[in-house]
Every structure is written in C-alpha cells, then in structure tokens.
Length: 219
Image: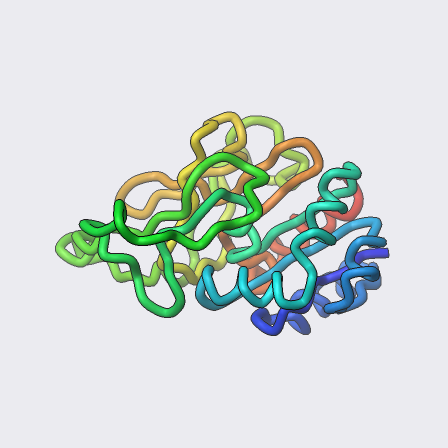
C-alpha cells in the first residue's frame, strides 16, 4: 500500500492523481496507524517548515514516519517533504530568519534523518536577475546511480520547482541530483530507503511520472 501523508499542507490530490496515472493506487491519510503501516510512503508539502513540522507533531505523524523509515520501507519526500528530512531549517513560520541573529534564534527542528540544514537562497540573487522563490522549470542533473533517475538522460532532466529554501547536506554522499540556480544546490537526495526531491514530480509531466514510476517499481 502506498500512503500519501496528509498533515493539512500539501497538494495531496495532485500527487495521488500522478501515482494513479502510472497505474498504482495510493491512499491519502492523516492517521498515524495507516502511515506506519505503509509499504511505501510519500510525504509531499508546501508552506512554511516550522508550521508544517508542528502540524506533523500535532497529528502524531512524526514517529509514524520515522517508523516507516527505520523499518527500511521506501520513502519519498517532495519539496517540503525533502526539507523535513534534515535537522533544522532557517525558515521560521511564515517569515525568514534574520541570518545575523541565527545564533540567538531557535530554529525549527526537522526529522533529523539526514545531517544538515535547510537554508534560504541568497537575497543577492536579485542583483543577478534571478527571483526568489525559484519557480518554474529547471534541470536536475543526477549525481551517481540513484534509482529515481533510471532511464533518464545523464546530463539532466527538466522538472518543476517552487521554493525559496533548499537543503544543504553535511554529507555530500546523499546528494542524488544537483540543480543550478546561479550556483548548484541539492535538488534530490537519497540514502538507503530514503529518497526525496526538491522539485515537484507531480507537476513535471512525463519526467515526473517516470520518476514516480521508478520510485514504485525500482526502490
């Protein structure tokens, strides 16, 4: 059973429809027992990191997600679902952290599955003609042999992005793909049974469907 986690912040139906288009069924649920019993788990998400983690905790879903991961079942995080995997984020509620005050500001904690922090794109991008949020189509270039990208071009495939923050892993070995937005950032990660993308496969047409099919069939 594929379960899509509902914590009140995500384009759940779009993800469910995309999974259905590749010939699989997926249940959307906010019940910890259903989530913990998933054969494959998908955690999508939009919104602010701190608010979303609070919603997961309020629904009792944090331990259910960790349980699925600990048992070695395939996990796919999408956008905010990738960011949850890391230890903490510079994004607090709806407002970005004052970077100068990071030492005094308690940062919202993630699941801590992967070492690293979620950081904001530099405001200086505007000086180089790049907007934040990073929104629209951009190329993800696979790094290494990640099953999510099986059958795709090695020089990269275009996917749809919509985000102002990105993950900065402390362990470079977990980076499964990189994308350039003035400078490269990790646009996909993989570690054991854990996979995640900063882009939205459910909005990425044929390439996104291929990635979802790879998750279902190859992981």
